[in-house]
Length: 315
Image (cartoon, rainbow, N blue to C red):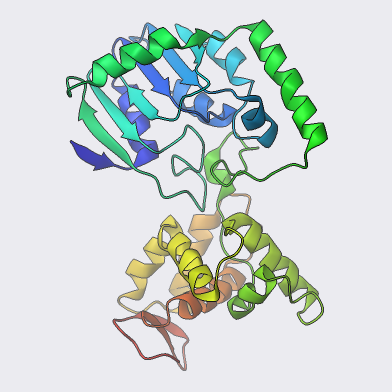
């Protein structure tokens, strides 16, 4: 039994499958199932997906009805529906990944920022696991065009009756290539982020900085009602899991000059949807790191070198 990195572990499991694949997740988004199915080897004869497909999930954008056609066109593909499904389960007949990660970009770490998820790798003979899978498949119903159309009709009614809601678990998956959704902070004044979160700043901030703060908050999706300390801890927690900032953290241990940082960011941003000059991106990132991790980073004067340390004094 081991804890694994969600997205890559799921794809690795699929690539190594030789017979049947079973995927169960309440939320399944079209780009994510496409990415998963693209890794299915020709040795696989069945690819069974179970999802919840509740009208409210469809209306909120948490799950896609289009996965029906995607699975119908896949060799051995089947879609089953279980309205009470909450488990997340990926199995290839030899081992299974069990945990919290939905088949979405944020759930599997293919969107920045991603959710903090957990998948545990278990052998298929783990006590009770095959019985649970068998129970799930027996109690689920096959998805049909008629069922899909009924759910779509109800979801459309819900969209008209209630305002659209953001679903932080999913993220923006408009692009087929999840890496295109790389997010980096834009607001040049991270100390003002709390005020914007509280509904202030429109009349006191430069408009570009204010709009950048709003865009950053939309991407980070902090829950409403946080205290300032909890808000800061929430943002810091998201930043800690961002791959690009994890790499910057490693580089800063030896002192990260502006020149090295520019080169690093230019390489990281190439081929993404981020239209930002590496120098500007680095100026913003430095401010965010020093603001949200005041005990871990400092800026040395002169060359503006970002240095990581331990329990550094507040500046």
